Length: 307
Image (cartoon, rainbow, N blue to C red; front, side, top):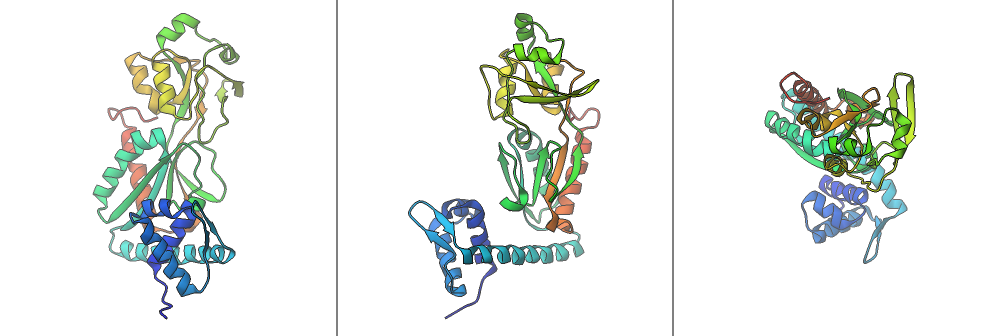
């Protein structure tokens, strides 16, 4: 019997655990489900343990599988560090980097940055995913989360990429019909467009004004978990929206949106967030430093609104 354990099989196993199914792991790795199942079976035979309890609909990791999962993550991380060290000596970062972000910021700002990142470092292979929820890079196997919002768990490292804050906006037509609020608590009588943000309670807007932080509970006939949808609703006069300055500024410049209660803002800076174990990764450092430079350039006069 061949008891040799392949690093590639450990990667398949770790991905299956993180994704919760062979099908999702197969999609992530660009393999067939049958091949993923085969590699897991080969790993189980080599280790002499059952890693998953299988049924027709789901997989459940076994106690032995949990123990292997912890060690496999450590082994793969050490292998990545070795590749990083070699790449750093060559001054050319290489290998796969898993990056995530939110739907709107990820699509509009991060995705174009990653095109330039891979052009600068052709040895990198970037796997980019966007979510409508807060992601824990450690638990979900991401190397880097490009995150809008200042609430960051203490077990993660955060490096500020760009200053940003959220502002209140509405279409001129909405304000002509319903009036312009003069005080924050007047928002309770308006049609607001709450968004289920990754880092903020739904329907509760915490903003900072001249007298410090204030909270208002808002509601309306329309709400969403997608900021771009809420912004589109605001543009057609459906209500008042709380959006990042980078997202709203083009519409303010065009006059299709008007800032409401401009003395109130909500801090929502842009951060590079990554696991503690990657603190010394040359590959990750190259990515973060590139993004710092990219967003600094985007914030320069004439480069378009970024904050």
